[in-house]
Length: 233
Image (tube, rainbow, N blue to C red; front, side, top):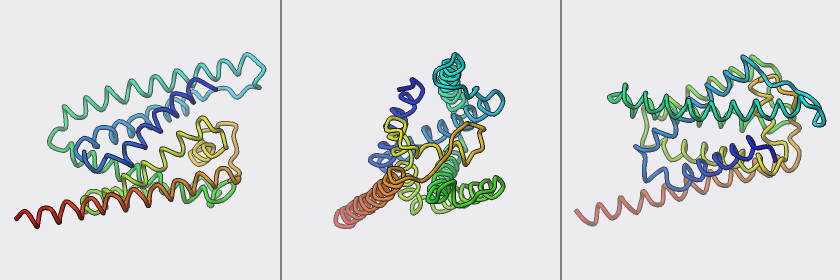
C-alpha cells in the first residue's frame, strides 16, 4: 500500500467519522477542521497542477519518484493547512464562525456534486466546464444555506461531508476504484479512469445510508434536547 494513500485514508476515515457522529455536539469546533480541509484541498491541488507527478510504469524508477512526490505533496498540504487555519483563526476572529460555516457548506456541496456525478461511468457530465459548473453551483448553494440557515443545514452538511470522506478514506485502502472519480472530475491530469463498477457503487450506497442515518440521529437528539428544555421550563 502506498504511504500517501494509507495516511490519507486514515485521516479521511477519522475526520469523516467525526462529522458523522459527534460534529453536532461541537458545532463551533467544527469550524476548525472545515477550514483546515478547505486550505488543504487548495494547497494539494495547487501542488498537483503546478508540478504533477510523472505517471510511470509500476516497475520503473519513475513510479518510485511518483510515490515520493505525492507523499511530499500530502505532507506539505497537511502542514500548510494547519498553519493557515491557525493564522486564519487568529486574524479573522470576528468572522471565524461565518468562515467555518462557508467552508463546511462549500465542502458539503462539493461532496454532494461529486457524489451525484459519480453515479455514471466517467461521470454524469463529461465536459470539464460542465463538471466545474456543477461543482461551483453545488458548493455555493450549500454554503449559502449553511450561512443563512445554520441550525437547519448543519446536520445535513455534516452528514453529507462525513459520509463522503469516510467512504473515500475506505477506498484509499480497499482500492475499488471509487476514489478515481476525484482525479477525473478535477482534471488533475492523473492517468486514471473511473468506471463506476459494482464495488464503487456499493460505496456510494454505503455513503447514502450513513448520511441518512446521521441526519436521523442528529434530528432525534435535537428533539430530545428540545423536549428536555420544554419540560425543564
